[in-house]
Amino acid sequence: MPKITTELLLERAVPKSTRLRKIKILDLSGLQITTEELEPVLFSHLRHLQELDLSNNLLERLPENLSLPNLRILNCNNNQLEDVTALQQFPQLEELSYLNNVYLTPSDDYKVMFLLQNLRQLNGKDVTKLANHVRVVNSRELTSRVTAHWGKNFRNQLPKTLSPEQLKSIRKKFVRSAQAHVAYGPSSLSDFTRWRVSSFPYMLFLI
Image (cartoon, rainbow, N blue to C red; front, side, top):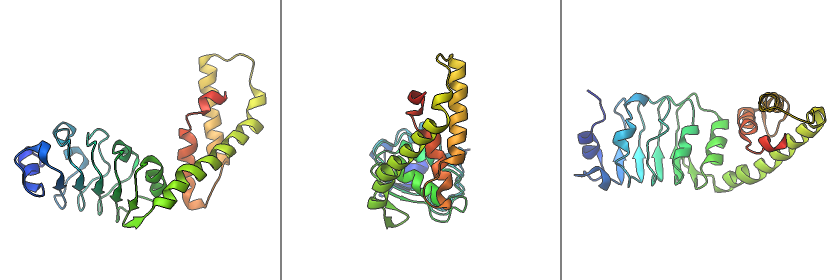
């Protein structure tokens, strides 16, 4: 029998509720919940949920299709999270906390600031200015450096015509090369830089 049931969600709503679609605040902290127990079909009924507390559980990641379009506050403190990219499914998120998840790094902080355009507070700190820097200045500088790397090492080596297979192969080599040679910021953010380089959508048009 799953831990997360309709009855449990109604009971843990703040205040208690009689219908899932009415819940705006939900406290699921301290239930030893694992990732597999966060059932997307059940959570899809929480369309008006604005605040969710998942702290003090056993989550290694968040499912990528929880369907919480109005979520604004999320607490994932004291879990076992290994990745933050699934958080991009919550575009309205303004306040996020994931303290004491030992596998997360400063690069993950930068990832969420880049992915969540409305994020104002991270782990209890105002990150409005830093997040804007990550999205604008950091992205602009990385774009410049990746473009320069392309021009110096790849542009003049291309044949006049390319098959789809060749295009795919060259793009793969370019991404690998850029990840290895393009650097920006302190070494503690190297994982973030490699992640950003690999996700640049415009690279397909450079070739």
